[in-house]
Length: 215
Image (cartoon, rainbow, N blue to C red; front, side, top):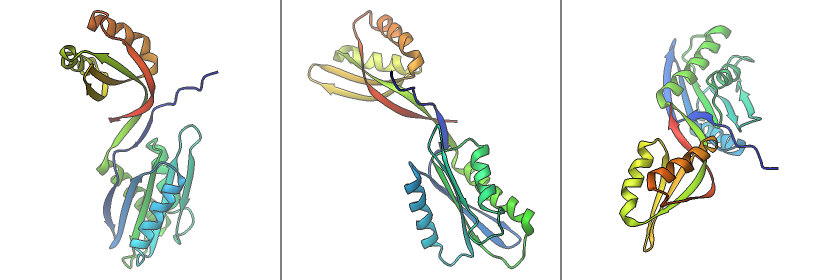
């Protein structure tokens, strides 16, 4: 029995930092894409080392697909006022493989529990808006071998049809084009390729991967 195809998921486009100020307290949100919990913890440790003089370095992360692992820490703030609202933002946005650390430099004015919840949540939410999101979509990798005279046109046709061209390898015997195709579209792709090349090219499956599409 074959394994089920992985599902698409959302994450941030890239790492980034965003700062807000509320009643003289600075809230600096650091975001990173991570592959697993070890990477998330390493990123957190790095931020805490860099910002050792801050009053708090509160954290939240979500990693994994079907059964994601979630963790959060208030790092000395009143219970439930920092890590939990940060984690809730990640959940609400539907993100995974993402870690957030919010560094707070206390400005001398207490915000109260509600103010802290809003501040930490806003810091993460605004940071996500600043770096942007993307969807990682699973695809089958197919290699199409064509002669040199057809390669350029076929590459353009593939892109125009919405297929993801991942690589081109120019060899003496011809050109190998690696294409990413969503699994449900596999039959339609073979039919499209046959029509586009007059039956002059075939696609051979070579593996699986994810492609990244901005949202």
